Length: 125
Image 1 (tube, rainbow, N blue to C red):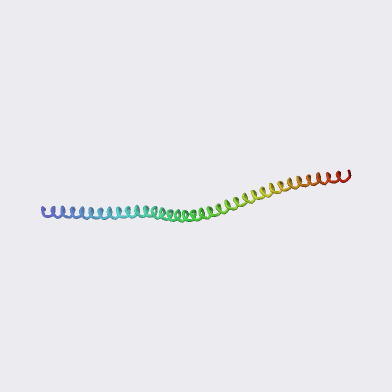
Image 2 (spheres, helix red, strand yellow):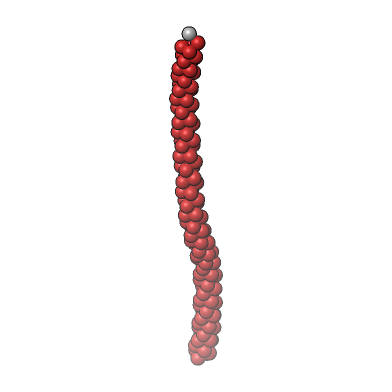
């Protein structure tokens, strides 16, 4: 009877060990699945961040190129406006010169008329 009790005890202990081992393997498998799921989830976020960073880098480069082109175009516009202003100043200078010449010519014409009238009156007297 003692031997039978010992065998039953050993059999129950073996069953408990097998049950404990099976539960340990299940727990390890569940933990592994959880870990893989967490890593996959994190990797998706990291991959998305990487893609976003690459897009931002591309956009920055494009913006830098466009800013450079805009700066060149702005410099050209400034140069054109300065040339236009200079041309306007020159036109103003020519206009003033023309007025000055016109005034001088009127003065000369008036003097010539005065002299001519003076000669006519002297000749008729």
